[in-house]
Length: 412
Image 1 (spheres, rainbow, N blue to C red):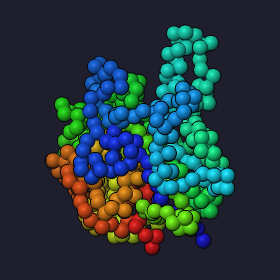
Image 2 (spheres, rainbow, N blue to C red):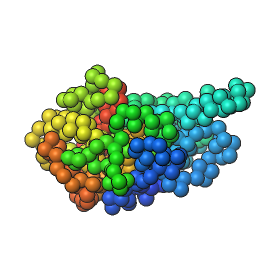
Image 3 (cartoon, rainbow, N blue to C red):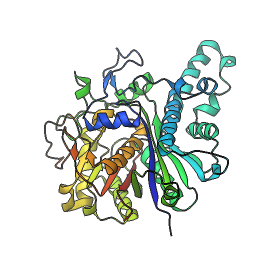
Image 4 (tube, helix red, strand yellow):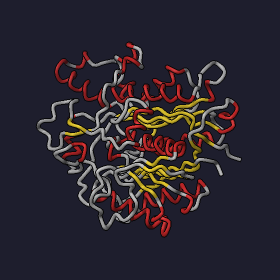
């Protein structure tokens, strides 16, 4: 018999808040974290707006020696992990190191380090390259760094599935606990994609949104949506076996009920026009959770604000949920925090856990003009206070990756 899995801690660093509590308050209030890019000179870029994390000081979370060797994305991950552990009131000690694991996801890893070291190589030559480059830019670097800092020796690996990374990592972590291979897993996603080369690449794809008012640029499911905006940060969940959580009288935000993944096998960028992959991921999650479509009350949608994604995702929801689709509440919090890439699904999973705890549905902001192809309830512009039973988070990634997670207020 598999172990039940619960969420007992949350850490978030996002464009709308430097911690989980601030992020949640601003999302409930419909506040946008999108603004003009300040991280670099974006005057030559067609779309110079982003979701930047404000007032983040890595030195408050990381010792000077480690800080000199890591990049911003890893700093986000370390800080959010520490917040989540503190929130869960979990203490790592000599008695439990092998029962605690770390499974994190990132789309780009420490690519900042590679970019910076490439510049040093070109300007100063190979003798000036950092001896820590190779060990610290890899996608699994953060999991190793955090394990050493905390002293945990349980299951430890990184997940990469583009924009579906965060959700996929959380699903893998939950299954490990369900199999009884760990009691606690620190899991989620992190990303710091706000560099000129990334912006140039996404601009070349014609994927980014434009608007004279940055806070109104993202409008998922609206007829006038025209692209997404990059965001940065980290979302971390503490997943724990229900048995272990009860033994220590832990707070419980939500129960993890099931996960699903699938691939479109269609195109590296565009989603399958029928939404087959994301539909199959949702079906798998429902089956794993032993839930029917009429038992899901809310979906935190991938909702990137691109013309194609939002239409395809709506089509998939309609196909899988059929007559129950019209009863769903659906919102895209990317309308406020932007597309955080590998961190997106993790932040949105954390939001789902908070929805379970508080019974508040965050809105899709900037929704003004309905699109006939997007014909569902997208919780426009204002949050709703409503008790939920079960909620779903969906993610769609470049390369055809798809993931879905289901959380509930109880395990039954």
